[in-house]
Length: 375
Image (tube, rainbow, N blue to C red):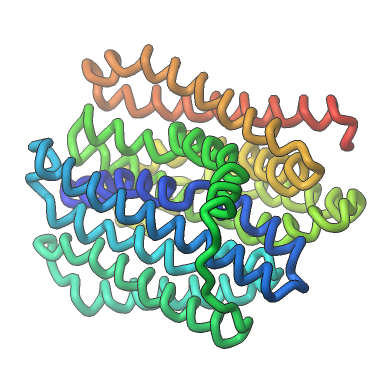
């Protein structure tokens, strides 16, 4: 469990670089691609601009990571884990999911994600034989992402005939400005998602971090079901503003979120013992309380990007996330001393704060929908 905690902490840390190199392009670029999907020259310009900016941020991120490893002792101890995990950043940059989303060709995203997971799973069984092989996990994960990223680029150039360009500086700056508010949104989201594991890794033991992240990984795996739905309907809603279609999707998806919550809340021990084994009793309890997020997140996500943002209220959509994150930061400032003193109890306090944050964001978005008379 200690090694699992180290790997989980490294992955949480690397997520900050993924967000920094994305800079909100995964949210802003699909809209631009969708609007200009019939203009090959414009599509090539958008694609080239985003990739050039992402590669620039990748270079800066590498310098920052190396500086952190050289300066901070905690990161020096397992420097190979952080370096191997950083390959995920390169993989995410190479994989232009935002392009396929904008072109409304989500099948490529699904297929390539399945390939990445298959590479990871098969490689784990082949190469990870004992606890001492834990350092191979982030390396295998990174190689899986990089491989699918290279395949994705081949599809972009071969199937969609996209041609690399070198846009003017003014065009690059324009893309930076258009993505800035989305970047703030992504940073804000990370404060109450990624930062929980990161803070636990700093304040508690690797073992406790591992218990929490074992439950959190299951929560994130289920919550990731939201992304294909958002990817599918966001470009469509940007173009059509079809409320009747949206309401049908919304009611069905929220119902699914409620059902998943009930199953997870009452079947937590069975789920954990099936996935991880019988020695994860503490993880089962954490999973039970974290599962309260499901109906909140399933509702909130659909009210956000594919509804508020699609109808032109992007700033309000981003505001809801920033507002929730400010609350989360204030709450963390209060509970951090408690987490230091009572480490195990601090985990449940962190879960409680996270659920409150999700509730605040949902209520803010409901307010926005009513304020702008969207429903």
